[in-house]
Amino acid sequence: KTSVLMALLGEMPTVKGHRRQHPNLTFPLASQQPWILNMTVRENICFTSTPFDKDAYEKTLKRCQLQSDLTRLAQGDRTMIGERGANLSGGQKTRISMARAVYHYLHHQARTDGDGCVLMMDDPLASVDAKVAGMLADMIVEDLHSATRIIVTEHPAIVKRADCVYMVRDGFVCRVDADESDIFTPSSSIHQHTEHEEAQVEAQLEPITEDKSPFKDGR
Image 1 (tube, one colour):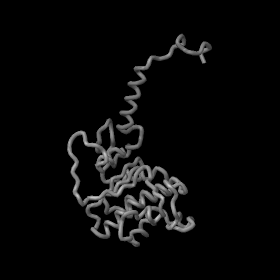
Image 2 (cartoon, one colour):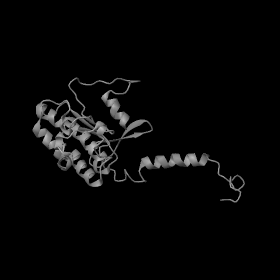
Image 3 (cartoon, helix red, strand yellow):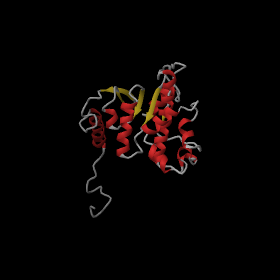
Image 4 (cartoon, one colour):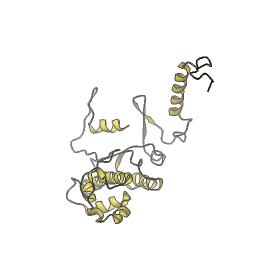
């Protein structure tokens, strides 16, 4: 699924067809592996977006559930983050990476009404606890409703409320119905397909009889 995002970003070589992008289109990305630099928390979030937008920054901290984290840091958002976020938890690194994308979008929206910006998030709820995941899901779906969002996730709270849902199946990107109540259950077509493949593999395996058992006592 990450490869689909990388292809959209032009970060994968094109072996067939063409990829065209409007020169003014931007793709703020919250990657699956948080990209953290040896800078302050604020610098990691705002990064290259200038000038500093205080309103967008404060909204970002609130939406990405970072306000309480900053109160526990010695110098708040001016606290230096170690190389690759050595002094942060996995959840904090994920939310800072997400905050960078959200801030970039809000900063862009304030200047251009949000046109020309596609917000991308790769498995944004993977490293956070259930309570925070629920709040972040609400933020992605509701608070950023005016944004064009491409989210890679298996989290039901986002998938069930998406405008369009696509699945990667057998190397192809397929559109499915987001309203299907059984999309995450064993009865879904995806799970049926997987079980069918497993049954084919098991049918090809030669069963071990008692004579072929490597254990003489049958254990």
